[in-house]
Image (cartoon, rainbow, N blue to C red; front, side, top):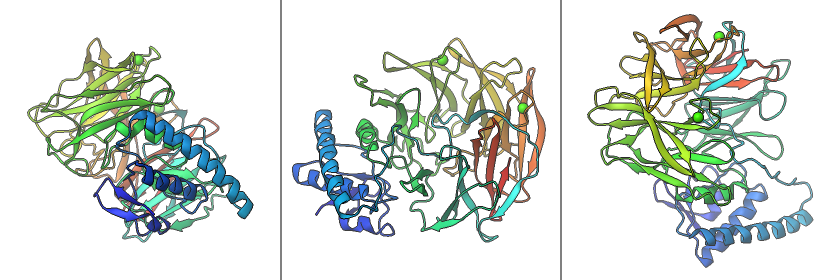
Amino acid sequence: MFRVRSKTDQSTVDAADLFEPQKVALRIVTVSIEPPKMLGLIWLVIMKRSRQLSGFQFTFIKSTMPRMTIAKVLFAIAVVVLIAGCNRDEQNDSIPDMPINPSPFSDKNTYVIHSANRYFSGSGSLPSESTRLQFSRADQNIKWVIASSEFGPDIAWAVVRDDGTWSTFRGGEDDVPKLSTSSPLEEHELLPVLIEDERRGLRLNINAVSNPVDLELAAVLSDVENVPDGSTVRGAGSILYSYSGPTDRYPHGALGDKTEWSQLAVSSEEPGFGGDVFELSADEVFEGLFPLVADLDGDGQQEIITTVSHPSNGARLVAFKLESDKLVKIAESEPVGTGFRWLHQIAVAPFDPAGEIEIAVVETPHVGGIAKFYKLDGDKLVLTASEAGGYMSHLNGSRNLDQAVAGDFDGDGSVELLVPSRDQQTLIALRRVEDSIEEVWRLELGSRLSSNLTVAETSDGGFVIGAGTEDGILHIWE
Ligand SMILES: [Ca+2]
Ligand SMILES: [Ca+2]
């Protein structure tokens, strides 16, 4: 009846293949909206609603439609879905309605927090021994781990192995996880997203659009070009930020491919929000997979923290804020100083001993791994502390940007930055003291870290932290 086109590789697939999840790597499809194909779009939505497309998702990356047409199409979809829902209920009462999720991006990503600020505000009791669960053969890495407390009283877990197979479970009081393993996650190099389906089943998917309400979100994001691997993060309310404008003009290739970004885009489904795009100068790129949103100066308004790279000077931090819905550059740091040298922005938190807000980064994680802290001072992001190096928070060429997190993991009232050691066999807690940084404790992994670090805040104000290692073990610290 209609075909969908993959934005990633421009291939097209028959809609019928959508019933065969193994056949289609449908991370991103573009559905051109013309009257005949509009019928196809409606059909797709109906099938998704009737659960035959469970586990699938679709994203409008670049629509050829003007916004008013999108609104009309969404209205038409709403009407037809309503009609289809009635018909379907007559046919099969056993299929429950798909819950309408009031919040876009209720799903959980590897950066766990929707703002991509990897700072958790609870109070933990580390260091401690981890619970070790053997999740795959000893020669099989665990590639991604997600923990979430958003799907019920028990922590929801997802583990992706390096062959793309994945498991989900809920941590019960007896600590005996029920495992369910599903088919390989297509394009498992990309960040997986944990979602809960209408039967409370935990599923993994890629990228963010996963329910009918998100169609509106997809329309909002229709002008954002963030393929193949840019992710969208959420700021206050429903304001969404993403790198956009893919470009190969800075061929560093540190983050999975040589595509970086020429733009920072802001969008929102709030009425009257026009959206904005900040365009870098022609020799610079945003070097990352997503920006980080946090209140840098404590005034209650969020700033957007980005990493901008230049072929002569390498990477630097650049902060923006939103003024009358427009992106305005407010401050930047000194660059690394050498081209094709990256810095890894990790978290914004009250790291300073006096509780002032700082940005934690690991500079040149592939060659030196120097932990550095910056704070906003006028129109500058000023270095407040730095140390000798030895922390590998990112592997060169990996899309995994989530191997470091921040929080008061030991419950002493000050915030730690948890980063992997140079050999990635140890997690090291760093703390800001006066004008420097000290190591306060270590978690030995016994094998090399192979996944992101995931953190879920528990109902009693504590944490659960998870990490996968190359020997196939999922480590859980509570
Ligand atoms: Ca602010
Ligand atoms: Ca602490």
